[in-house]
Image (cartoon, rainbow, N blue to C red; front, side, top):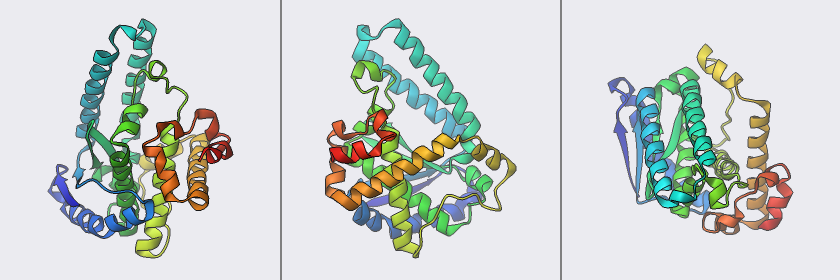
Length: 271
C-alpha cells in the first residue's frame, strides 16, 4: 500500500499533514489486521477548506445524479425526481451547517476509488487539531471506510447515495448503520492497539462555541442509533468472526433493513 497526503488547506496545516502521514504508516497494518479487510493499493488523504469540500460535494452529486438518470431514464416517475431534488437541496443545507463537526470524511471520487478529505478548520473548531490520540482515531476510522469501499468495490456507497432507492429496490436498507457502526467499532479497537486505550468522541475543553452548537444539534435518536450500530457490529464480530461479517461487503442482501436497526438481534441472526 502506498499513501499520499495532498495539501490543499494551506501551509499553516503542514504539521497536521506530516502527523497524518506518520499515523497512516503506523495504523494501516493494524486496520487490516483488526477488520480482516484489505486497504486499496493507493491511499489518498487530502486536506481541504470548507468551501472546497462543499463545492466538491456539489460536483459529486451532479455526477452521480446524471449517471442514475441516464441509467434509469423513463423508469423514474416525476414525483421521484422532485423527491431527489429535495433530498439534494436538504443535503447541501445540512453540510453548510455541520461542516465544523466534520473533521474528515471518506468521499467517492468515482465508482472505482475513494479518498479521505480532512478539514483542518473543523479540527480547530473541535479543539483536536494537535490531539495526536484523536488523530489516530480519525485516521483509523477513515482507513476503515477506505477498506470497506475496496471490499465492496464501491457498491455500498453507490447504494447509500442513490437518489432513487425505491426504483432500485433498496429503500428499506440502512447502509449508514452498517458502515458507521463498523468504522466506529474498528476505531475503538485500532486506538486500543496502537496507543493502548480506546479513544472516545467526547467534546474537548478546547472546542469552540460553534463546534459545541453543531454537536448540540445532534438528536438523541442519532446518538442512540450509533450506539446500537457499534454494539451490534461488536457482537457479530465476537460471535461470528470477521470473515463471516465481511460477507456483507459482497452480499448486499446482508445490509441491515431499516427495522433491524431497532431490533439488532434480527440482523445478528441473519449472519
